[in-house]
Image (tube, rainbow, N blue to C red; front, top):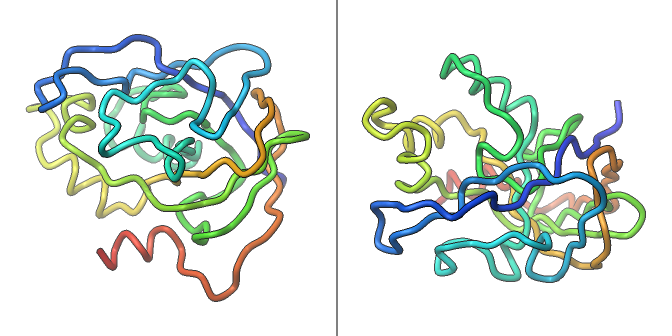
Length: 183
């Protein structure tokens, strides 16, 4: 089974948030057609908290459909593409076992490099359901279904349906989940 992009997502709207920044860009939704990807991520996407999200090493966030399906069962609701704040909803690969430094080609031109896992935060917990999902950060982290941050090596355009090919997987490198758990 080959891996592919199910959806490319960008911020739908900035929302008020009780955190220190006062706003969040976690509300991501799929876009239609090809989308440019530059060094700082997917065109038309933003990060409200640039201290903890975004930048060159966290330019794109990928989350797998298998993990989303798991959480949909746990939470008892549908979790559409973008719900986790991801830029890419992917299928056919376990992004949590990706190795730091692993390189993927997405579509015909974009090449990305795996840098780290998501570090779940209180903004994410409030987005998920606040008081209705107490302990969400811990629960999400313990499940090991974190998703991967990617650095953009070669810019270009991507869209839903694009194939993802692992170009290089450094044997000695730890997985992003191993790095997260070692923190």
